[in-house]
Amino acid sequence: MSQKHHELVERRVVVLGANGAEKTSVISALLGQTGYEIAKSPVDCVRTTAEINGRKLTCIDTPGWWRNYSAVDTAEYIKRKLVLSVLECPPGPHAFLLVVNSEALFGEQERRAVEQHVGLFGERIWERIIVVFTSGEGQKTKSVEQYVEDGGEALKWLMGRCGNRCHMLHSFQKGSQNEVSQLLAGIDEVVAKNTEPYFRCEGRKLQDVEEMRKADQKRAMFRMDMVDRKREKMNRREMVHSSPELRIVLLGWLFSGKTFAKNTILSLKEAIHRGRTTQSKRSSGTAVGRRISVVDTPGWFKHFPSQYLPDWVKAEIHGALTLDGQHPHAILLTVPVDTTFQEGHRKVIEDNMKMFGEQVWRHTMVLFTCGDLLGNSSIEEHIESEGAPLQWLVEVWKPIPRP
Image 1 (spheres, rainbow, N blue to C red):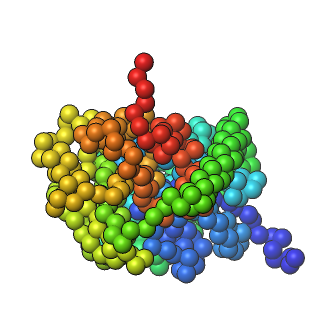
Image 2 (cartoon, helix red, strand yellow):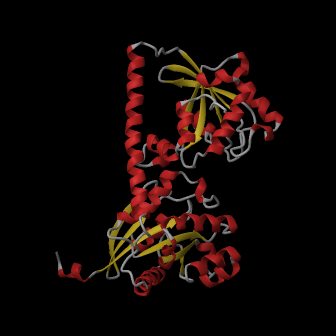
């Protein structure tokens, strides 16, 4: 090992932020590695190290959260990845960079989302937080002081919470050497002001999260094995028959990924609009040598029972099962993997499915959407980490007996 390497000051940093906050590009600017930039936030923790300004700098990129959603709406496996990110830079990070996009609204909802997700690490993390505001060319004339002053009470709360430690990176994709140098100096100041050499999670928090993750992984392996045995048993009994035509109906709550699933199944390249689906519509195509038709439907409300659903939406959803006089072979119930699934969500699904009668569950399969966001987690691990409500949905497929 060279003498030069011995003289390097080591700095370990975990980078946090909501989806779209440009965490990855901030790391790229810090490390001077434009090739590191990617189109969107990582789904797993990503470690990158480089020698910068006399420092051996290690940055841990982390999965993001939805910027105006509370931590209770974030899937458990994502929250665990956040907390366990500190293990990616042993023995622990010197500082945390909380990245905030200055061109997006930062109101009370965004403030609460930050408070709750950052709070997963414990109270002491705020002593090591540096807020990094990202900005494009359009705001290059605005200083960080001006941005905070104009930002409202939510932003001022954030500044007070982290001791007014903040920096602005303009045109960060190219990287401003002066701004990067200031940020690196800010990291050094965090280290100097803290008596502990690096961040340690409070109490048994880290150990508890790791133990829960391992327990879920163990149960997930059992679940995978059980499914494989059942599939093998069905194949031996010749219970699986392929018909030349397959008719599918997609059901689920609003923005659960039904239209994206339809396009994926049929290999369609239609643009997906941000607005909701308002009419049940059949699309057809060929997949794996079979004729496939898929009916996309309007979604129901995620948090409210069917009594609040407009009659026209109920009529469209109910009519999907007999659209064009054709009954479906299977119903796919779409559930996105990047949000939590609690008892309230289960009850809403059960309530909305009642309009089809008790037998509908015999023809229903759960289709998890946004699967690319799982990263190195398996869908079985997600099912186990979310607990009884999601396990009921994939296992029982019938109403829970009432006392």
